[in-house]
Amino acid sequence: MCLGFPLKIVEINNENKVAQGEMNGVRRKVRIDFIPDIKLGEYVLVHAGFAMEKMDEKSVIETIESFNEIEEIIKADRN
Image (cartoon, rainbow, N blue to C red; front, side, top):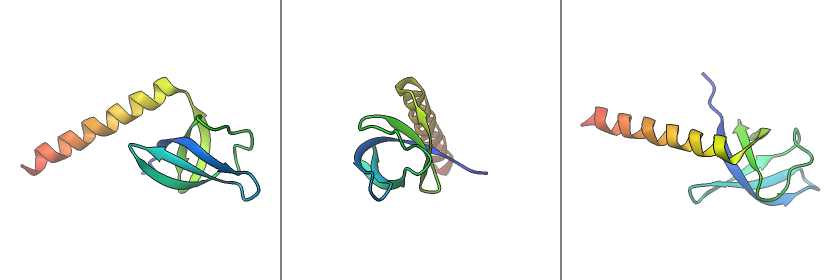
């Protein structure tokens, strides 16, 4: 199973086709080869270190809420 996760683009280095993405205060380096028109503040779906597609904010919020629900289920399962 493959899992992509959303990040908000907070820095861009177009020369190297690399950006910094952030979610919940955690930053990750992201390759932006597939999305050359990306802008600061936009959200992307990241898989294997590559931004695969842009996401709208509503979808990002729903995805993060789903991740949080899964985390709570895992925590409850451990207890």
